Length: 108
Image 1: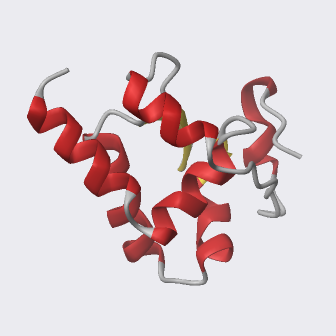
Image 2: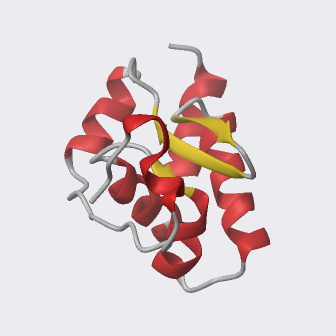
């Protein structure tokens, strides 16, 4: 594994808010609308945290209509596999719309 990737992944995982986001995604895909409630911060701040996780290759996104859904990348590096093993899953899907269930994904 390249040192710059290790650095990006360690920096991305070394933040409590991003750890909470990863905990939410351990059970599957999550709509971006839920992350604002989980973290209790603004949507632009949530987007910045998600951007860092995506740039580090830890998560991926897909757009469904006006919503973005995020999930963990299937093939994690050994480093991130170890980190993710230590994070307890967190169930969270309260957006109140059908966006969490589009495409057969059910995060409840």
